[in-house]
Length: 435
Picture (cartoon, rainbow, N blue to C red):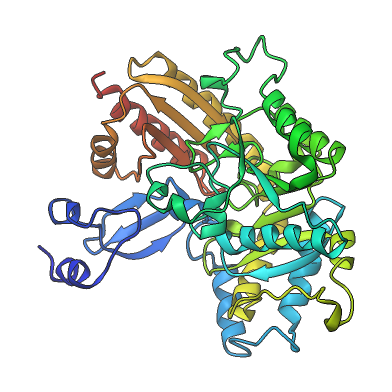
C-alpha cells in the first residue's frame, strides 16, 4: 500500500465511510485537478462526474477564480463581520440580490449549506416571535428531503441510514409525502396525475398552520434523497399553499442553485418567490466554503429595533462573509456572464437528457430522470453500487452511488465530447450489471 494512503488511514476519518472498508478498498490519492478532471499521483485522470459533491461549477482551477483568490489573499484574508465590513461582502450581497427572485432583498452570510439552512430556520422561528405569534414554532418538510447534517437541518430532513441514529436529538417536524413520481405516494402516473401529492401537504397546513413557521423543501431536485426530480407544478403549488396559510417558504437551493437545473436557481422554473433561499456549494464554484441565506425586507424589518426589545438575531459564524470566499464567489458570477454559462448549459442539458434515454432499455434500470446537468438512473438492484463505482474508476469515471441510484451531477463546464464519453462509458458499465 502506498505510504501516503497508509498515513491517511492512520490519521484521517472520512465522511459517510466505514473506515474498515478502506483497508480493502483504499481512497484514491489525487494530486491535482483541471477542468472536470482529477489527476492521481501516476498521472491517471478521472472525470469528476459528481462535481466534487455537487459544488464544482466552472471546472477545477478556473484561472479567473484562482486569480481572484490569490489577489484577495494578499489584501485581506479574514475579518470579523460584526461591526466591520469589506468591499467583497457588499458587492457579493448586491450581486446575489440582483439575480435572486425579486422579493429577496437581504443576505446573511454563513459558511456551508447546513448553516445556511439553520439560519433560515432560526430566522423564521424568531420572526413569528418578534411579531407576537409565538405559537408558530413548527416546520413542515418532505419525508425524503435532505438539508444538511447539523441537528436542526437533520430535524427537517427525512430519516435514513445517514441520520437515524441521531433521531432522538431532532426537534419534531411535520413530514409530508415527497412528490416522487416514480414511486408516487398517491399511486398515480405522471401522465394522469393532477399533482394530488399536494393534498397531504395541504391537510397538514389546514390542521396546523397556526403553529407552523415554515415549509422547507429542495426546489425540483431532492438530491441526497435519491436525485428525485419532481414537477414544477408541485413547487408552485407548495408556494401557493404557504402563502394561503401564512407560513414561510424556505427554498433550499444549496445543491440546485447556480445553474444546475438550467436556470440560475431552480425556483425560476416555477416563478416561485420564497421567503428564504439557502445557498452554498456552487456559490464559489466549490473552491472555498461559503453559505448565504437570502430573505425579504419584511422579515428583515421584524428584527430591526432596540437591543432591549430582544429583536436582534443572535446568530453568526467565525467565517461569515470571509473575504477570500467572497472574492471567489464574485469571480464565479463573472464567469457566468463572460462565458454565457447558462446559455451553453441548455444545449448540453438536451444532449444529457437524450443520451440517458437509451438507458431505459437496460434490464437493471427502473427509472431515468434528468434536469439541467443532473441525471439519475434508479436501479432495480441496490447492491451493485460498489461494482459500478469500481468499474467507473477503470473507465476514468467517478460514479459514486447514492443507495440504488447512479447519478451524474456534472460541472457546467463539461464539453460535448467529454459528455459523450461519460454517457457512453456509463452505459457500458450499467449494461454489464446483471439483474
